[in-house]
Amino acid sequence: MATVVELCGVHKSFRRRARSATFAGLLRDLARPRWEIVTALNGIDLAVEAGEMVAYAGPNGAGKSTTIKLLAGLLAPDVGTVRSLGADPVRDRVRYVGKIGVVFGQRTELWWDHPVAATFAWRKTVWNIPDDVYRRSLAFARELLGLDPFWSAAARELSLGQRMRADLALALVGEPQILFLDEPTIGLDVLVKQEVLEAIRTLNRERAVTVMITSHDMADLEQLRARIVLLKEGAIAFDGSFEDLRRRMGDRRRLVLETDSEVAPALPGATHLGSEGMRHEYAFDAIATPIPELLAAAAVRAHLVDVETHRAPIEDMIADLYRGWRGASSGYLATRQRGREHLPSGSAMYSRPRARGQPP
Amino acid sequence: MAAETLRLFGAGARLNVARILRTREQAIAHTLTDFIWHSGAMLAPILVAVRFGHIGPWPANAVVFMLAYGAAVSSVMDALGDSPWHMSQRVGRGQLDHLLVQPQPLWRILLTEGFTPFDFWPVLTLGLVLMAWSSARLHVQVSPGWLGLLGVNLLASIVVETAFLYAWGCVAFWAPRGAEEISSAASGLVGDLSFPLDSMPRALQVVLVSAVPSGLLSWLPSRALLQIPGGCAMDAWLTPLAAMVLGAFAVALFRLGLGHYRHTGSRRYTDNGHRR
Image (cartoon, rainbow over all chains, first blue to last red; front, side):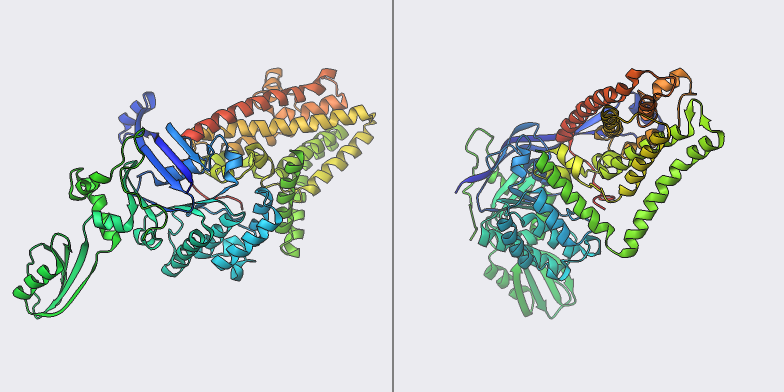
């Protein structure tokens, strides 16, 4: 498959004015401003192939939106090269942006006082979309995202969910080759979120549209079955499938024991998370502590009424990961991740066995 | 290139007419409000001129011509939509990103997005009718040359005002929050001074046709076109000359600011006023 997006050694930093809280400090800053350098991206090497779905994740300030802005032609890198669809997004902006779709979750492209339909007609003109392509892509987008019930409503009258569906559909008109979605599910209720995610999956699966999506919601991203790229302080800390991520981070599980006592038994290799009456919840790594071993230990220490095990939510795992990054670079997860960190630019782009295309 | 620009003007015009014609009441109220608003703004100097027969060397009909000229400039500016008035808002609020994701040259988007020709046709009509009426009363020799000069000056006045607002709006590239409203403030500075400036001190006149070019939006071109005493024949070319200089300055400044924006991006975003 062809590489459609390529970032090589991309650095991007911003200057931020340091401000004092005291009057004297304010006067001093006025005379001699102080600046802090915030590194948003620190040597990103990334390649995305045609038809891939890439989930781009990381804690706040990790550089997710900066990457999307670089790829949308809104920002230029300080160092390194950004190529997408064979073009430089900034230099070839006019030609390039006609081939991509961009959705920023917290912004709308809809004309506020006009019916949804009017914005689509406006886009056809501005994007210079041929009639047949417009008809075809519009029909597909309207059906996929269920726009008919509010097609004639003014954008200002739409709910957030309807607005996001319309924005996503708008980005699909003209059949873009790549879709960049920055936090498209932010603020949406569960049902609408499911619909939007399903639409994105359908789009990727059936139309082979390359999708690059950022989100804070890891469960959403896992549901997309995307290749996940995790950013840490502007650098790629992990690049692979969710399955791979879970494996790398250990087979994190939850164990819920129902016993005849309100006192939670202490289990070696498991951490007690909390109890509700006689139900006690534990976290454990099923690789380090196999389930039969743990259950045997539990049976010895308590009278078991009921037992449940399930996988730890991806959100919890990622939260641990972020905590590990924030706490110490030598933390548990950071250490486990080390083997999957990127090589410096100039060497082979990835050190990992990549899960290209659709993950299992 | 021209066809593409016209196509985008057409898209703006369609949105404009759709907004005005949402309801019958809306259409009537919208048109009347604009008409009354602009007529009201012209009324005071006209009444003064009529009461005293003149303002300085300007006969009452010349004052009418000057105000009508200003109304025509203002109506075209308004029809150009959001760009000149709200340039600093677009930059300061991070809304420039919406324009940069459109597959069109930025100049074309800025020129055509938000084009509202149907909002201001009553004022433009009023301006043109009053110019024709007053020039007839003043016995102006209306020749093709004079009409050409009028057209060039009208266009130049529009360019001067647009360039002035853009130049100030560019400050928002470097001070997005502090300069967010600077374009609309600058428009108040140049747009609200529709009075013959002949009685002003010479130094102030120079300022008002250069640093704060409100005198170029109606007074100086009208004085030249009507050959009011105090000016010279070359005055008719001062506004076009200023338009070229100020236009080039604004373009250079905008390019500089855009280069800065490409590297810093927008650190803030607010949709307030975006495409409303």
